[in-house]
Every structure is written in structure tokens, then in C-alpha cells.
Image (cartoon, rainbow over all chains, first blue to last red; front, side):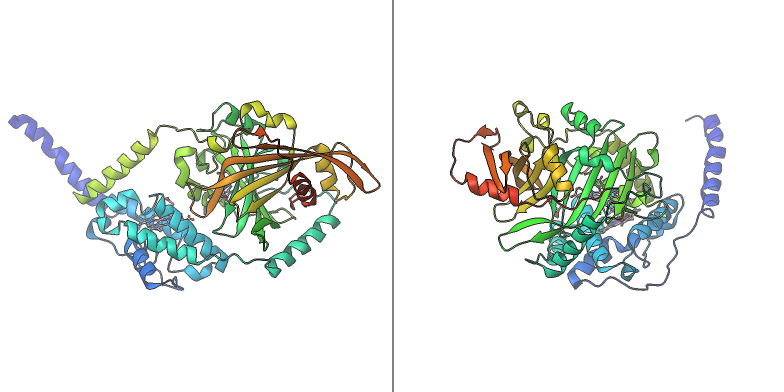
Length: 313
Length: 160
């Protein structure tokens, strides 16, 4: 290298160093709020979570020196903030028992799909990698949380109660709307199904419907990505299991919709989400609830964020 | 160096995931043979049934007449009602441990109400079996299947 070009490079390097030092003062630092109600789980399960997940999903974040240097620290800070929002092992008792169970199954599925821990994190924290034997521990743990009672009287009673409600209800009300403005769509009844799902994790069963645009997309094999205009509806019931091993829909729980519009729903990967609970179609969630939907549907980002593999009719 | 890896790998991960080949997502094994023209039957969903012993999942459909009758919770049948029970074997959902989804068609049972008068109902039953839904000539157990299908209650579903 010539001396003159070396001299030209010097100010650039100096500037780089100054900027590098300067940015160290920009951005929030990761805080450590109090641990208010930590997760209770068997020792071997908790060890895995502590080793691989606590850095982001708890208030006990242990950072390495290189995590605290900007610009890497910005990424870490943002990761920790969002990770704690979605799931925080230090504030586990803010959830209901059903929510806790659901989170644990979600957690297992995120790890099994290599979606968590984050790949960028594993690159610098190789000890956080989840080995096959850890995955087995987690799977056996979530499986141990399920139960499926035969002729469960409390489930039968809620079903009977709702059945009476159904027969007595007929007055048409105003169309309910989710916080993001998506309305309850009653027309799903006239759509075709694209799949069913037996959920032994939550003791529920589901039917997934597609609107005519969805059925056309399946016929044309245009399902990855799905075209604009496609709507899917999913209905969820509790399971009623009898002594012959037959499971039928019990109490109706909720309906969920996904509406494809690349532009309108850009912030949630092109899908608009909505959910309505119980027979009175109570809109689910508060403002920004749709991020909790898409966060989980991220697991299937390679199939346009849709879990269901549609059946062609 | 390590923070360099941290950022580079984040960028690389984003790049790699954005150049993924888009594989078909259709559940081919559970799909209907196109000659069967299932959609032409113009059916609506009445309920779904899982059999944990046989490891099957089924959907019971009805034509417009059957669907209307279900909606008013009426127990009187009319000629022309049609009920179709589609049964699939199950497979583990490859994308979600905790879920089972349809694998292959086991059978399609079609029950028609031919006449209904003073509590006496005349029915017709047709059965199609296997992945290809070939018409079944076996008539053993037909009456039981018909009775089973007609005994099903529609699932509770939301409406306005």
C-alpha cells in the first residue's frame, strides 16, 4: 500500500473508532426487574430452560461482555425486551393454569422446530444449544401435563348448558369486531373445510374452513404463498370422549380467522388475525393482540405462516 | 470478533430464510381423487368425530336440506336429506407436536333419506372405500352405519 493512501485511511479509522465509542452511550441497557413468580418445573426441565432460555426469557439475564457492546447490545436489548413480553419464566404465575400448559407446549414446539433459541444467539453462546436428549426431557414433560378423561362430567355439563343456550338464542345482534377492526364472518358456514386437527396437547378438536378463494388456491396449487383474498376460519371445541374411544365436539370455545392481504396486513406478514370467543362472539384480545398470533405462526414461515396443509377436494 | 459473528449470522439467517424454495403445502395423501367430484355434492359441515381406537378422524356433512334441519334442531326428517361421512386415518402434524391431522381417506358413506312418513324412514346407503374411493359392494353392516350417521348431533357452532 502506498503511503498516501495509508494517510487517507487514517481519518476513516479514527472516525470509525469515535463513532464506535459514541454509540456505546446510545440505547437502553438490559434491566433486571424483580422475580415475582418463577416457573415451577422438575429439576431437569428447569436446568435446560435456565441454560438455554433464561438469558432472554427471564428477569435473570446473564450477559457476556460482548453482549454489552454496541451495536450488538442493541440487538440483545431488543431481543430481551420482546422475549420477556412473549414469555417470562420470572413472572410465570401471572398466567392461568391453562395458559401455562399452552405456553409449555408452544415452547416445546418452538425448540423442536429450531425456532428457539435464536440462531444468532446460539452462534455466540454454543452452550445454549438444545441437544436431542434435552428435547426428549422437554417432550416427556409436556406429555405428562395432558389428561384425557372418559365421560368427563364437568365437560359434559358445560356442553349441555351451552346446548340449551344455543336453542334459546335467536335475536340477531350487531356484528362484533376484533380490536383491529376485523369483523366476525358468519359466512364461514357456507365454506368448505381444508383440514381437521385433534389436539391432544389442549384436549380440544378443530375444523379449519377455507373461503371460495382458498378452495380455488388449493385447486390451483397456489398455497405457498396463498393469494390475497383468501380467508381461513378455525373452530375450536373441547373434546367429549366416551367409553368406546370416540371423541365428539363438546363445548364450543372460539373461532379464529386469518385474512390474506399482503399490503393491508404487512405488519403481520400479510395476514390479518381475529378471534371471537364463546357463543356471544366476544372479540378476543386488546390492541396489538395480533402480534401474539403471528409470533406463534412464525414457526411455519416457510409455508406462508399457515400451519394447515390443505386437503384437495 | 464474537460480536461480529453475532451480527453477521443474524444477517445471514435473514438472507437464507428469504431465499427458501416454496414447497407445496397440500396434504396430497388425504386429498380426494378428482374423479370423485366431492365439491359438486354441495355439502356443509355438521360435525366432526375422532375414533381413538381406530385412529381415525371424520367429518359429517349434510346437503342444504339436512343442514337446515340441523339448524332448527328438528327431529323430523324429509325426503331428499343427504348425509355424508368422510373418514380419514390420522398422522402426526409435522408442524406441531400435540396435533393429529388427516392422513389417508378410509371411507365415504353417503346416506339419503328417500321417504319419511309417520316416523318410518326409508334410506339408501352407498359406501366408497380406500384412498381411491372405489364403490364398495359389501352390504354387511349397512343398517348399522346408517343408524350411526343419523344418530349424530350437529356440533355447536357460532353464528350471528
